[in-house]
Length: 140
Image (tube, rainbow, N blue to C red; front, side, top):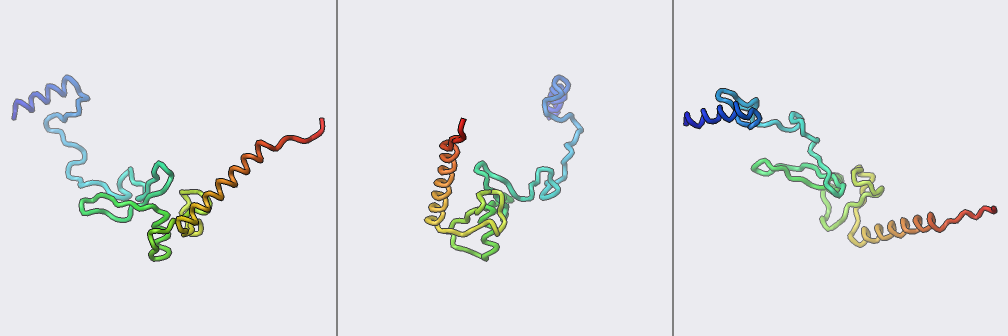
């Protein structure tokens, strides 16, 4: 055992950036069980945004301490209605996935939701066509 510690000291002298501690040094976090919540510099308030732009909120923790997340717009609607059938879609009225205010959320069936997005796509297509087909008609 002592020979291994001597080897560590040799390694540390040869390469101080090896990541190994010299004999007698203690890491700064010895005895700290972990920083949680607002004490942790990485704490984001229990919310995160995924690659699709939706906000996820921590709603509970498992027995081993892992966080359980839920889509925040569904959580907000659930808090407002006290519960709703999971087969419904929670739609962002203004299209902003970060705006989870109850006034911006609407409960819809899958059919209604698909129809709404179809309508919005048609409107967007019309606006693009208008932009490209409008020709300056002023006389030269």
